[in-house]
Image: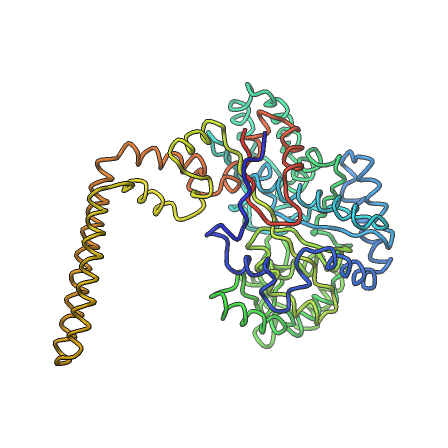
Length: 528
């Protein structure tokens, strides 16, 4: 495997402008939230002063309990113990509990988190840095996570849903036998099958399944897995939840930033609600306030102010943060310096800057994760043969296709020459017509528009004719696009890691770790 290209996020059309501006430090007020050693030095100082030893004890104890059913590496045990010390900090990424990890970028974001910790240790040797994977175990949208895809098949699990997905117990294991059929003859197929069977054994919860899988893949790197569905961790954030219920603080204190981002970029990723909490029972339902009572939406449950505050005091585990409150929860219970996430995640974190200031929690460094693309040598050869560059596949490919179809087309050249000549003639005519009666001048301009539209129609019809004539070339281009973008999406958002692991095993993970970037946000293209 070798890296053949890196494309900066700045040069990819589909990367949101907000992310590009953030990386360029072009958004006022977020300069200290971007990746730099100076910013990390400041974060270490801020977090040291805001995260006390009691928080550390609670976190270490919670991790010991949550991970007690796993076989931990010596590095993981050391990291849990180090978290009790004031010179230890975390770098965090988070993700849903997708079946068998879901799309491959799940692996990439964890590896970038691990490598960032190593980078920081090299630059700040007096401190320890612990990689954290935060499980979104309380999410309730089971349909988002109950499947994964390989090159040949789509795998799905069917279970009763509606509550926190991490609590769902596995009964349906049919997908495992189907997976075994696909991968039994691969070099590392047996390893994958054993991995899947161990994690998704009947009776395990989805939380346990992901803990087992992630631990098997990353334990030697010292990665720690945090389950936010925890009474002891939620005890740490009761004050913030109470403030949210009484004062709608996140909504009020993020409004200015949300308005600014909406005005500049058209919309925000997630709109805050007045109350950004769910109530957890056998289902997970939004909490709403009607001016008198707190109502659990879609359930026949309501609380007075006194009742809901008593509920929070005695059963904090029943209160679940939504997508915007989850970052606040993470930064409250972790000695965290930076969050590594996808573009959508980074965009909703940006909404929270003022709210973090209000509740006196340091806002972390935000790092848009790298993307990776693995292409076969055969595919790369086809791209070269058509005189294309890999970057072309991350531009408007319809435009690229059209230019290929019409490349060196004599009729197009003639049309463009005549169009330019006509445009020049009309410019001369308009210049003279302006000295005559006004309506005549307007008629000349209208006639130019009419004739130019005719040329546009002719070029469009020529393109259509050439596409029919060059259908074979068109098919080759379309097939190449699907090789790069399976299901017309980024590869890392479609294929499960098993597609690559099956051929290369753990050496694929090591290779990803070696090639992933730390200080920049790039798409890394690797030949296999």
